[in-house]
Amino acid sequence: MKKFIAAFLLTAGIATCSFAQNPLEKAKGAVQTAQSKTLDVGNTANAILGKLGPALALTETQKPNVLNAVTGFLKDKSGIVGLLGTNKAAYASKFSALQGGLFGKLKTLLTVAQYTKFLGLKPKTNDVTNALSQLFF
Image 1: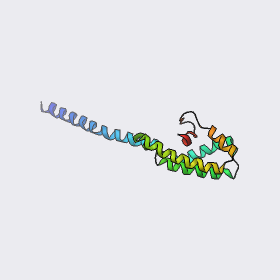
Image 2: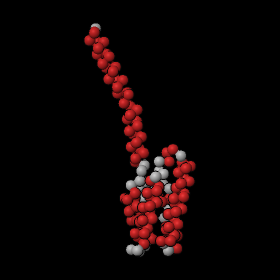
Image 3: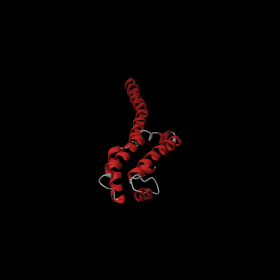
Image 4: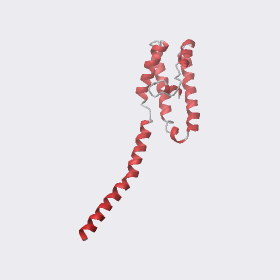
């Protein structure tokens, strides 16, 4: 009988320990989800330039300047992405200001025709497979 009680208590103790770890696993999952929402600025900026270059017929002089503007925008955007899960209104407000700054820079770097074409490249929805979505959403 003593062995049965000891085995029961041991089993109950192990079960309790495994349940105690569940909140930790949930916290790890939340951290991983938050990290996946962060931007890979360098790769994203290069992917955007890879689309804008041919679509807008960017010159060799324009390419580094556009890349710098996009990279700066994405760095700033990465600082507010966390708000998407906690305060969408604050994200929208800050994103609008960042986007206005980027678009103002692009107006000075692109010709009128290029800038008009750039605005026409806006995806209809926020498509994670389209790097240009990062500039519009």
